[in-house]
Length: 414
Image 1 (cartoon, rainbow, N blue to C red):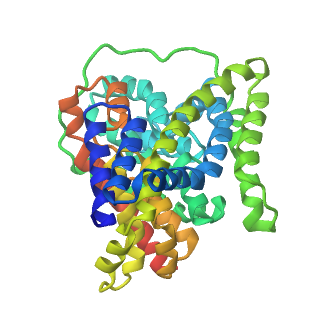
Image 2 (cartoon, helix red, strand yellow):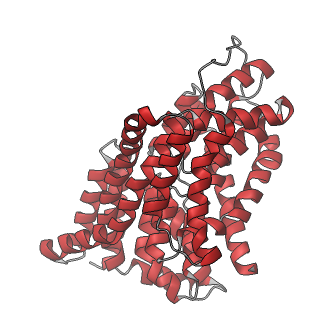
Image 3 (cartoon, rainbow, N blue to C red):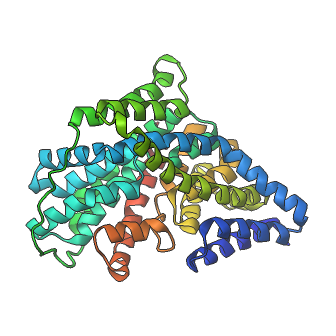
């Protein structure tokens, strides 16, 4: 059987198994195994290609685990809550959708997982929604839209692994997402949300904000600022500080600044737990990426786009979008797309930085489908039923599409 068709069958099998609630990791491994065997490579070669795929992303996995220190600091010290509440208080009730979206953008841009960012902000959104009788769908879209914008310029796993697979500086890939993220935020808040149907308005008991002890805003921001400054040393003065160093250093600084030195272990454990889940998923993702990379799928895609103007440019976001749809995950989508197509994209004339950035943006288009955990985690944070949560998918996809188009246009202009 043609290797491209075989790899595609393996990918489809993985998708079906994930939808049927089998473990995503084992679904990906099994799909990779079936794809290799159908390609006629034999068991030994198939396993070798699967292991090679995992080896390719191992450096990124190590960096992602190191990033858990910063994530744990932001969430467990209360820094993330402080940042979100400060923004919402500053912008006020009149601009509540902007405040929620901006809060999610900043939290994800600082390294908080998008689902964790939404869950962190959701209690405040519920309070404001009840108080102002707002649409639950619009509130959740504001948070998800802002989170998607922040996700393309963050030191989160999707950005780290895209940069690693393209051999591009993480700080440069993050910077490439700034303009698309700003435009995406504005369009989400001032175009998409106003055009949405109101749906069911929130009208319940007025909850009070908790009086939990939270760190001050400047203490909360110190850790992320240190991380960003360390990563920015490479483009500014040529001093390279690897994300494996910059991310945990920023986390430790934040833990000390917020007065949580005694809770260091709790912060580290939380961060490691979150990152371990992603790391294990990436092992399964790597096996499938190895099979796809060794197959002729990339050649098929190159041939399909050969007659298009800027076909090489389109390959990046298309690969990211397709793989995010397959896995319902920004991280897994960016991993498979960048690991499988990076060489072909660069060979087509796209720079490594922008190849990674456009794959990353493309991975936000369909990463919210129901066979992924993000769909259920975000819906649950607002108390939505599955039927109600499904109504949001078209609007989330539009946000991702806006980010992708802006990323491509920015690359073509600059």
